[in-house]
Image (cartoon, rainbow, N blue to C red; front, side, top):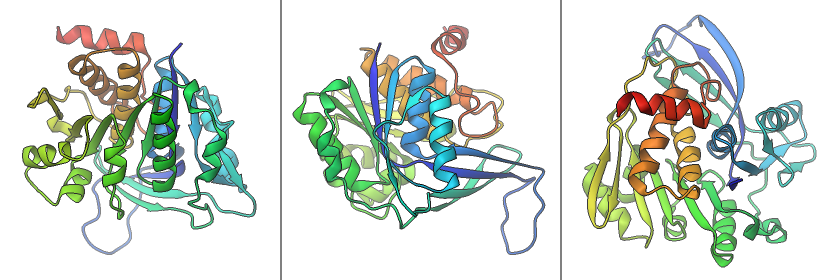
Length: 298
């Protein structure tokens, strides 16, 4: 069985479904509401577990009811939380999310200041036990320490390069695979043109670079040439977590030994299927469902 570690944040997503995303101040009524665990690395961990990997989530939560619920949900999806640190008398992180009728969303994240950034405790973990280590950029010190330890152990690293206030150049340099969101890539490079930005990101690492662009698919550089995977057409209900699921599926497929083109295609299919159900995790398929879906596009 493939062994995957996902390092980063887990948050409680409080999701409000509305007719249209607000464009001005006022009062709005939601048509539906749900609470579900979220966070880039945590949702990637759930995706990898659904696909059949043995997965550990390494992160931080408070000892509040939210933290207890977040870890219980991860465990219910088959994700091991043995290496997650629980801080006493601390609040866990959460997000407020609004999703419109087309599945587009606005996310307001509250990263709890009670969860310390210190990552030295990761030194006590043997990273050689995993086939691949994924990290998000929301816990910078955790990603840096995890990637350093993973590379020392000869383990492949995958970075979820989403938008963040911090300079993530050192994380990109430590990545064997750096998969950016389009805003994350623009933030890193300061370049709006997708192709030019991707080429600039490539200069920061000896690994591979990718950029996900929602309904426009995914671009990456292979053998010095820009490649493209179109997005799959599905009936979109909710795009929340789609990028996170893509990263988890990409880590799984790379650990499986797929060549890059197949890995990106597989991850794109998993992310597309996720979007057919509400919430960030309910629609995540298993391997059989993904292969069956892909067979429709042969």
